[in-house]
Amino acid sequence: MSTLSRSATVRRRRTLARVVLRDLEETGATTVPPWWEPEIEQEFGGLGGFLAELSRQWWTAYAAHLDALLELGAGDPAQAWRDVTEQMPWLRAVLDSYAGEAALAEAERRHCDVLRWTTRREARRAA
Image (cartoon, rainbow, N blue to C red):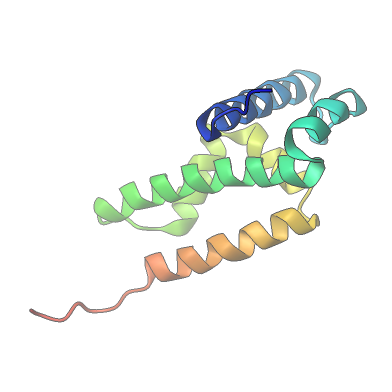
């Protein structure tokens, strides 16, 4: 039996997440339908793992966009949120549908801690 590399696993998971999101968008659903549950269970160990992957994708895109805004001197976290929501509306809609899930609450807590640290306005000391 061969063991897949970490990068192969990440690619496979990202692909499945994209396919499920595309299906949700096409059907207008914002919660995972039963026909995806077996694949999600096999790949992510359940809905929590799948939601954690979607959350990781969201926060990665958000952090990158916020970083770009900060570098341009327009570091408004709310603007970054609106921009990324416009770019990834279905991903945001699905995450919002599962807002009460423990997997998302933990991810949001971690990312909000990073956001607070990133956007704090402390004067730099001269060398």
